[in-house]
Amino acid sequence: MKYVIFIPDGSSDYPVDELDGKTPLMVANTPNIDKLAKKGYGGFTNNVPEQYTPGSDVANMSIFGFNPADYYTGRGPLEAGSEGIPTKPEDVIFRCNTIFIENDAMDDFNAGHISTEEADELMKGLN
Image (cartoon, rainbow, N blue to C red):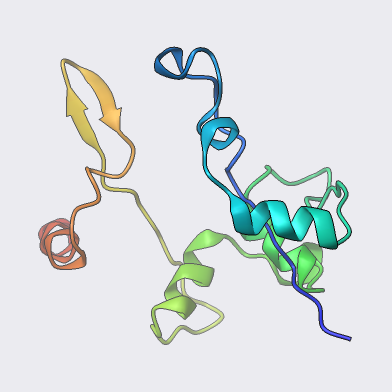
């Protein structure tokens, strides 16, 4: 038997006025998701233990069988590992988001999807 674990992380979104109060997912063309829903089994789960802030880092760790209480040390080490950055248990690893501010307010939580190279230049400046 084959299994697919489909995690639509963040897909619920918020209603948008331009979409007549619907969410982007409500108006999206989703034939493959629709097929999975019709032919598979679905349900709701809570993959974030109560003492943790809800986030994909803790949820995915739980989904794949790793108890966050035993393994979770923060998002920084997970992202360092995904980038192949070697770490030691005594390391303190910081992560940050590059953002865009306009009119004294955060306009974009990821700086307009700047390239890795552009972000690398910013991080070198911070270092």
